[in-house]
Image (cartoon, rainbow, N blue to C red; front, side):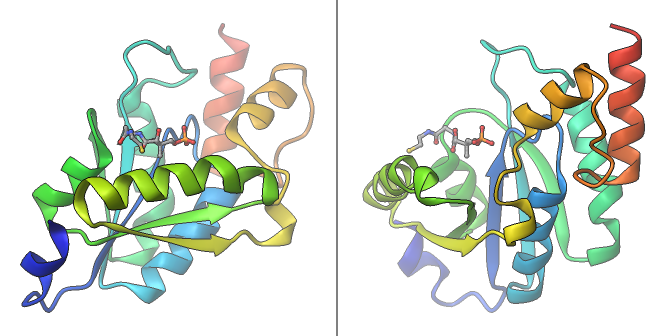
Length: 169
Ligand code: PNS
């Protein structure tokens, strides 16, 4: 169990997990808010070998590293397997997730309960900034693929990477 082991720890850690293919302003909003609440925030990028993304995992890590550098207390890592194992290995007692709308809640609740049952890790839900309540990486990729403007939805460096990737694919 994660709880009792971390009781003596002074460093308050949390993880923001996801696919981040690519990171959006919505993700960034949640990560920046988590970074103000915790001493250390891990951004954990899931490696999914059965699903090829637009960006390789290393590219996603680099983009996240670049756009979170200013926060100072954010660490970026890739992981495969169970999120609770990632947490256990790093003594992380809390998962921070953004909730965009009620439609997110069903699945998020299932995952939160499963993760808590598996290891005692807690999930904290942060209501997404309403500006980003419709935003997802999939929608960004779809709109950008067809030439739509996503410049207000992703950081400039991600926009540049998107344009480069989509122009050359
Ligand atoms: O950005 P996404 O794709 O919505 O993120 C989903 C993610 C990575 C948070 C979720 O799929 C996950 O935690 N995967 C790791 C595997 C795992 O622990 N599965 C059990 C969840 S109850």
